[in-house]
Amino acid sequence: MEGVDHLAHERNKAQFDVAVMKAVWAGSRDAYELFHRFSRLVANDPEMFIPAIKAQATEEQQKQWLPLANKMKIIGSYTQTELGHGSNVRGLETTATFDPKTDEFVLNSPTLTATKWWPGGLGKIATHALAHARLIIDDKDYGVHGFLVQLRSLDDHLTLPGITIGDIGMKYGSGAYNTMDNGSLIFDHVRIPRNQMLMRLSQVTREGKYVPSNVPRQLSYGTMVYVRQKIVFDASIALSRAVCISTRYSAVRRQFGSHNGSPETQVIDYKTQQARLFPLLASAYAIRFVSEWLNSFYKDLLQRLEAKDFSTLPEAHACTAGLKSITTSVAADGIEECRKLCGGHGYLTSSGLPELSAVYIPACTYEGDNVVMLLQVARYLMKTISQLKSGNKPVGTTAYLGRAEQLMQYHSDVLRAEDWLKPNVVVEAFEARAARMSMACAQNLSKFNNPEDGFQELSADLVEAATAHCQLIIVSKFIEKLQQDIPGKGVKEQLGVLRSIYALFLLHKHIGDFLSTDCITPKQGYLANEQLRSLYSQVRPNAIALVDAFNYTDHFLSSVLGRYDGNVYPKLYEEAWKDPLNDTSIPDGFHEYVQPMLKQPLHHGRL
Ligand SMILES: CCCCCCCC/C=C\CCCCCCCCCCCC(=O)SCCNC(=O)CCNC(=O)[C@H](O)C(C)(C)COP(=O)(O)OP(=O)(O)OC[C@H]1O[C@@H](n2cnc3c(N)ncnc32)[C@H](O)[C@@H]1OP(=O)(O)O
Ligand SMILES: Cc1cc2nc3c(=O)[nH]c(=O)nc-3n(C[C@H](O)[C@H](O)[C@H](O)COP(=O)(O)OP(=O)(O)OC[C@H]3O[C@@H](n4cnc5c(N)ncnc54)[C@H](O)[C@@H]3O)c2cc1C
Image (tube, rainbow, N blue to C red; front, top):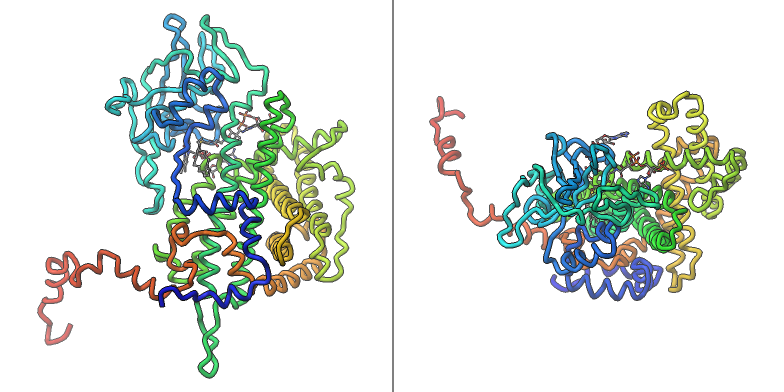
């Protein structure tokens, strides 16, 4: 049956222009063309510590190091985390002590827990590290700074004196992340020239004088802001990939429901399958659009920083940290749900899902543990609320907190299920829920004499408030996306359906928040769920076309279940026969171990 499109009947049901949706998903027609060409060329672009050099090195240092890194004359590793500290960056123990006699820094790992642990590329490949260490001058500790340290000889790749490096060992699953040589590193009084401290933000002079920067010290955390916004985009790719596989397979797979010899029911037609799958489809689009917005916010931040305008830095940190957390959690959980949606075959490596999961789940931890990141958002929210009293008007993603008084009085006026399709009705409910959860935390915090004690005690509630805030951002950005001019038959309508599914699914899932904050009544919650069910029916005929719009090649999906042509069963069978176990009919060890058991004498003619 080679060449037959088993999903053609599904594609014919689509009520929108898939070619235009492909451009919307890609971000623009040009981005689509580029992605289309490149994905078919299978590009592999190693990028590791270059963003950090760009952010933290002086122009002179960039001139020296960037050409080497770009041409891969040196291979760098972003070496921050230690055995004892990852989240707590200020707690790092590695030291870089200035020696005025030789104009050098001496890098040292004073304890076992100071061992660098996890950095990607470090274990086997990196020639250089961007090592984070405490700057010590005249016994005074100036906190964590970045230093470029050569680790291995550029001639024979042997580690240099005073440096002990290893790979940290096998990681979760047998998946592709094991091809990454996450490493460990101990420094034993390793000397580097003074000009290898990254000095864009603060300098150490020849005399050993520390010249602090006149810019916020948080700029030294800039690489994390950059990478976190990239990770949000990456979450849309990982989730959409899993959703594409399980949507196509759900249309191919049939179970039960045959009457008088008619075909069985496609599992995608079961309401339970739809209620699990379609919110993930909607989430993939929602994450895609919020990542688009985050990227433009980030570009705006860079322009402002050039002009020494630091005003949006705290918001950029809160947004990148919070959205990194929410989107990677949704994507990681969503991939696992997609595996379950494919039943037993989803557990086969050839489904592509186990490896995707194993490779993806550390995104919830790297570049900031997801709970720690939400606590950063909560701090930002509490600070914003505390400044309301002094007349500070919040802007951007916290502007709604400026209307807190009004939002505290809000009661949804939904009367019919269709009312939930109105974007302003949805936004108001999400704003009121987020504002009330944050205000409640702020009020509870004010009862503590020591705010830090209060923050610890209330941290679980604070994480929930931060989650509500981040979900509001994603819902709002989806709505804003649809306020743009989007051409193409039916494209905007389909996106409208997905937007409503995304928002109402969240409302249904977090119904406790909406009810306990008294934003909506139980009856209104019931109506939202009713509307959700009807939206699932609307998305059903378009489901295959909506995942086709991701424009993923079979090569990229690497999944027998997610094949574009839906020709699943013959290919599953073919794939199984590639297993080396099937090379011979008698397995290794059979004659040594199994056959002797089979040949044991029978007792009284019985087993
Ligand atoms: C770097 C490698 C490059 C990778 C290549 C990139 C190419 C990307 C291409 C595609 C990407 C897609 C796929 C991605 C694959 C990625 C591979 C994995 C890479 C993994 C790399 C790592 O994991 S590196 C290690 C990362 N480590 C962390 O994230 C540590 C987490 N901890 C922290 O960030 C902080 O310490 C903290 C946020 C928890 C703060 O702690 P603390 O309270 O002690 O803070 P401070 O006192 O230091 O500061 C308080 C003050 O500062 C504000 N603030 C904190 N962080 C920032 C920031 N980043 N920006 C701006 N402001 C910040 C904070 O809010 C406080 O403000 P106040 O106003 O004083 O309250
Ligand atoms: C695959 C992978 C690749 C990585 N690559 C790199 C790399 O290239 N370079 C690099 O430097 N690092 C890298 N890391 C390290 C990574 O950045 C850290 O693991 C991450 O920042 C989390 O820090 P941690 O391990 O210290 O977690 P911990 O902070 O020890 O977290 C353990 C638990 O404690 C909780 N917790 C911690 N602090 C708080 C708090 N204040 N309040 C409430 N709960 C808290 C967390 O939520 C979590 O549940 C990588 C990690 C992984 C898994």
